[in-house]
Length: 296
Image (cartoon, rainbow, N blue to C red; front, side, top):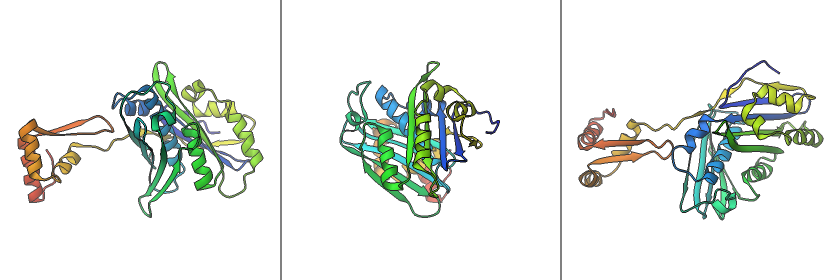
């Protein structure tokens, strides 16, 4: 293994050199905390968003091109939507929509009702791909493993944990996957599954990758690659909000100004609200007519 020392909010890739199995490990605190702080999410929904965040980060790490992966859950239960988007640079964001009360210990199916998992892969160059599977399994981990078994046909196992460390929310996870070149054996994979099953929450949340991987796999030859930072990145801005306003019929905008005194756009991903008063809205439309897209 390398001597790389990491901090939290990182993704680590590793390879079992003699077993034709690859692995990934992600540890998140601040990035996760920023997502669940944007709204007053129920406890169970915070946990689900953490699981989605870990899953998306692990899946994004398998991309062999520049682009993004979006994992979303849709259902007819109290939670109608839960979605996390991440790209090859590990810039992530997420949001969920719900109605009514949700018990702290609510299960995936109690929250989502009858629903499905949608995984969308969008390369910067090339065709967009979307896979849809039912919510088959007791939890999100099993649902995604079923997705891999049915869609990717690559033997894959995930371990996803959410909880607290030192009083702060943490989300972390591991993935092992048989190499797609066909050289990996079921026996080798089962051996690594059994070892990874022993990982504890506090180890996943608090140990650096090098130490954790040594604890789990000290009898195997593991190559640990350079870590990749994971950051919360919403992408919203005042300029984008202004650009959205001028796409709305001017009469409708004037009605909002007359009633509210300003036009406000709220970002569900980060909780930021952008407000424009009457003179600022007027400037937006004047600039749009003149071809100047600058928003002051």
